[in-house]
Image (tube, rainbow, N blue to C red):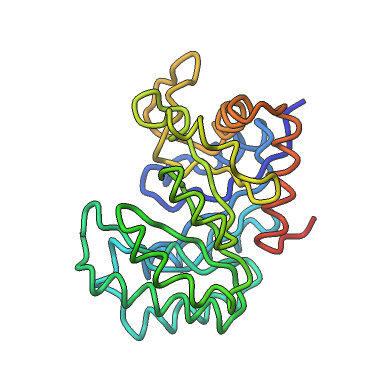
Length: 265
């Protein structure tokens, strides 16, 4: 019997899911992925994610935020939209928000301004915050640290960083989301070594579908598209790397997701 899992980050409004979403959800359920949080990352994406979650109550939930790639598009209307969406029962966090200096699709100043604005929303609405950081650790911590006391909880989504960065996040009290990056023998080996540093009560797992297909899947899937039903493979590699059973890691990550997002047990 499959474990009961929660995928805390799946981009189910992505174009690649528009033709077979019902089948994607059915495959996830068959694999034990009972609930998923749909990531919002732009104005239209937030609306789509909330509507999708509303259409699948107690099965799908959503976040509402503007990804740093889209920070140049962040307006007063974006701010109002996120605030209004957080009033919905299905919208359980503010984000995806943060900083991404790896690609700088938006200027750094715009990223910082949008990040600060969304942290204010999380503080005002008492919603947890769903965080993104890439190649911007110092600025990220400098901006985040002073406001965390006003925000219920935060998760470093899709953590791929160093041992020192992980230490900083844990000292800030963040939860840490691990994806299929840990299954990548080219880029994820360091994650296998440090994932055991995350305390049981702060660990979360996610697919970030359709991205980051686990490279350890056997047999190799025909499609390069990642799906929530691959979450058990992330679970397996995380458990193996931590020296824990899959049963234990399934139980703690599900309990943590329920607590983090305030879901019904």
